[in-house]
Image (cartoon, rainbow, N blue to C red; front, top):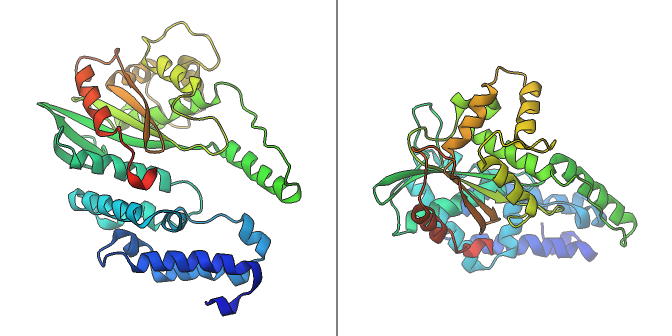
Length: 342
């Protein structure tokens, strides 16, 4: 499609696609971004211009990779390509799995946000001189694969990445707000959730790693070495950030000696009791689930790819306890956001 095929305000969207096409054409022949952004995929995006009204195009969502290429400088795109190549060259998984998030044509924030964060963490570790023997996606004895393992001095440390965006309910409320804006540009968005909604979602995210479906036998973590969980927060309409008081409150709960007598409906123990009642499968016992938190050596929380908070679990067991020096090493490695996520 060319500019002659459309007229008026739609020419703006033609220009967006031409800009992306031009940037892709200037990438190297072995570019992972080019490999994942096929011509047919760009053609499908192009076909939406004549098929939709200008209002639908104005308010429509677009694939994150398309927006990344369109909005990023060529230096940032090349930096992302370089990190993708580095991770691919050290991964034991096949190319399709490594770049699954790039191939996704979803117009939502996931899996883009989680995939970009994982690439950043892996590449930062591979480039660092402060850690050694970096291995990616190596299977544990239970068959699960932590995202990476590194040596800090003589100690092996497992690192697992995960992401937390908006809840489905928040996404629906935000969608309703966007619809109201189309009718009234002065419409005001009011988020409605209790103060501890996000803390419960943080519990859920952590237990999804240490006890998927409330089974400690399916843990993503190593039972004989320190484990660090890295959580990237990607909120649009809520105040879910690394500096949010509710995030610190949830970390306090998870790293406290449990049970700690907290009777709040949002306490970790009450949340866990409720989840066990709701689960449809046979779960581990309440005591086993609480004890599983001792396998978490520490948690680092990010806003996107910007490190916001780091917390050592002083109630980790002796096998999983990490020192301040070891945690500081990881913090230094991940203290600078990559050019492609600034």
